[in-house]
Length: 203
Image (cartoon, rainbow, N blue to C red; front, side):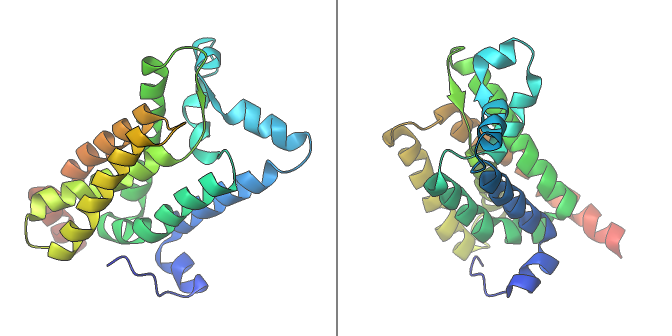
């Protein structure tokens, strides 16, 4: 289910939203390497609670497209590359994009309200955990009908939550609230009655 065997061109054609998000995140990270200009992008895009409190509301959104280093970027982009395609195929392009952005947005809003004004953060982890949360909702509805999905996703979610509390310098609020928001949106997307209505409308 999560084995990626597509060619580069096929990946872009089959999963345009996932491909676009990968390109945007990687492209912005490359821009941050530009002397002077890169530091400005990073500073004005990162989530700084004190700056948000002063009215810089765009910082609720922009941190999900910035990363603290190449390792941080590769970890999140690998998760996006592997797990986003199947979800985009299941729920459709716009629903997937909505899920991703809302999970990241609410993760950053939670970060603002939970941590003090001196807290700063970057990363797509809230949105990535939103993807995991949506799969969790699919597991909830399908019960034992998709054992491969259940056996793959549940350990990933459990390990992800454990590592959130074990690893240093992790935005715990973003991970947990991204997961919760993704799960709640997924409950709406994967509701059996709603899925039936999608199929009917496509006939």
